[in-house]
Length: 360
Image 1: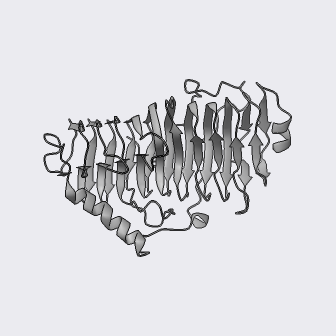
Image 2 (image 1 turned 45 degrees about the vertical axis):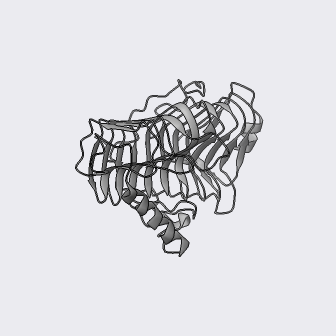
Image 3 (image 1 turned 30 degrees about the horizontal axis):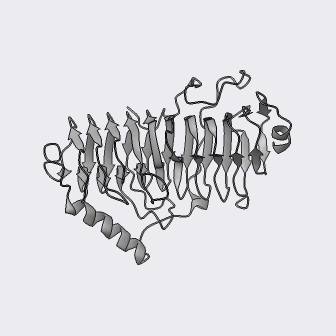
């Protein structure tokens, strides 16, 4: 595969024949598409030894219709690029992330699946504006389904399934190296049963049993999601590095949360608005009418999770032996001419990635 990529010029399509490829690939030519002829039969295998499956350092590169497994690092990796797209990708049981873009903008992840990662199945981080879309994807058996670290909008995560992770969707501020996270739109997702004690996890994330967690996030819109069956919180905003502020949580259906369907921790910044949600429980109890103060009980639960991690009692599994997924929907026409790798450029799927994963 690397030999084919090395021979490209801008605008080329590298069409990869079915087979298992024991290599790590680097793409340094801009505006190239690397596409498998069959998503489930074109497999990059790291043999638990190699770093990243495909690492992209050039603008406008699309990766399509490929599977990557058993890498010690990340499956599909874009960094410092303007223009990216991942379509019809499968990433499972890799040692860091699944499908990942860092300090990038103007891109899209679509029709893809990620499982078995000790960080996030899908990750966008460290840039603003991001100008990105994540849609029609499934993440399960990861520490985190989607992580957006210090991202600035516009950025939309929509029409996807996040289940059986430790945390489903996680816009977050991890440190002060970049401006705090803000401006994501999380809309129309199915988020359920993110309570998986056997999912792998890094020690820096002692988080478990939450559907959508805004961790030091601001100016986010969380709307029209179905969030259910979480051991701690359905949707929660919690301070980390900075206080959560000016978030709008509206029109969600949240149910069957053990601690609270809707929650806001202390201290909370101003302007957080919870309204028109369908739910049974909340912390504070009057979250839709007087949420501004937050609840100490919410913060106590996060503190207890941190204490578990400190004494080595936080549950976690091994990324090497997570469940192996079945076949995923392949690209309808692998011979189609390439399309640009941008936020606005998309492929239609004959079968949605989310089919059979519990989306309404």
